[in-house]
Length: 399
Image (cartoon, rainbow, N blue to C red; front, side, top):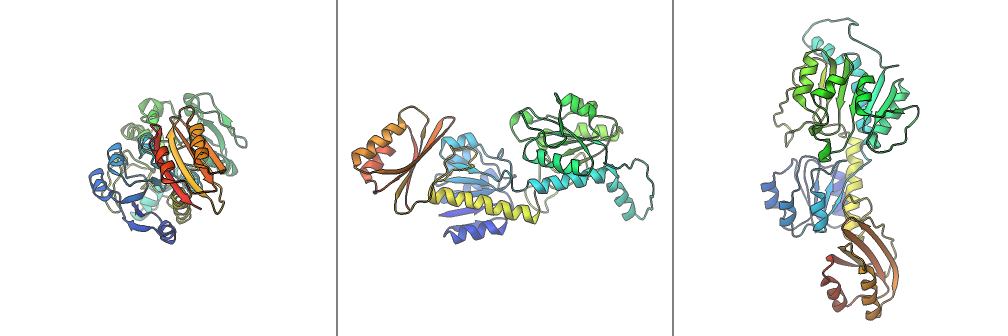
């Protein structure tokens, strides 16, 4: 079984796959659709980060592809619905780099409040600019968090610990942590916050969430931070509001268009602005986070192909598989229609095998059942299951 890992995935993932007996090919950068089309034949597991796009065309061409591992938080770079229709599981690391992102944002809040980017630049230019003008403590100021999920809530906790007041807005119903206060609208948050930090996902509805109108609603002198998705922010509008002095600074870690590989040229309308921190999508790029992500996603992929487990898959029904020994296991992904499970069990009864364990879950248009039996299923029984009009795929393992 062949594994293709792109975009500098941590070596711990390579080691895990090789220990499991897989053949591993590693590439430092991302690949374009055309390049990846040439590489996919024979690849069973594909590991990517945020720059490689997995399109329906690629999924159609990847006849051997069983699963895609996103070694990051987001999965919007993969057409997860099309992958589900083809039975390709998609896994990610929703929690592994949360702390790394939070620590970067907290550091940026302090740096922007103290105007450290321009102070540092002037020192490098040989200018001694010892002045408190425009420099503030963060204690007692208000942080507005847009998106109160895993990262937003942990940022809330750490920010309170250093004296910030926290308000947040989320379209979902989220429990407030500590003394954080939920506000009723994005407009209310923008009007009240000294610092606005964005932590939303990459769903299409979030594209262009922050433009000229939203920046105009922010408090004069406020700062803006985006460590979520590049397509959320209109960079030109942000530039205008920094140049006008309405906003006192910004920190941006993600961009609408990002270079594919280390060392490639980068351009943005935000380059060259005072009190603006630009970082190359490194929010989750600490050694600790990348090692944990490599370990977590690799083991999810290995577990899927060796036991059929789909726990924490983002697009297939989630089944946590037990680990009994001495059984014959089948994993059956099928259309989510009534009567499929009854039909499976009828076939098994007619084959004279006994079910010793069975786990079923459904998600949207698909159902997934893992069945352990005390006897090996015959080719005729397996063929009957595969020939059902509801079948997406059927796989078997001897445990």
